[in-house]
Image (cartoon, rainbow, N blue to C red; front, side):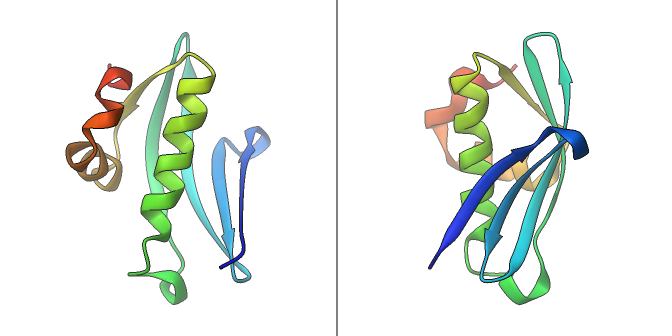
Length: 91
């Protein structure tokens, strides 16, 4: 599966392009923190782990930028609950 992850700061979102569809995770930046607000995955890509791969990449980007993460998105919160390797990012 060919995928491309990117940050789109002009639209305040991370994007994961998969098979012509784009999953997005909207965010807001605050000093030292990224607030993950909402995640959307196209119906055609649903149930294939695309959202999880998107959030993993977004959290890895936050870590690389030295930011903490705050979740306001139920999907992100559920992901964080299952992936303790990101506990150090939780604010």
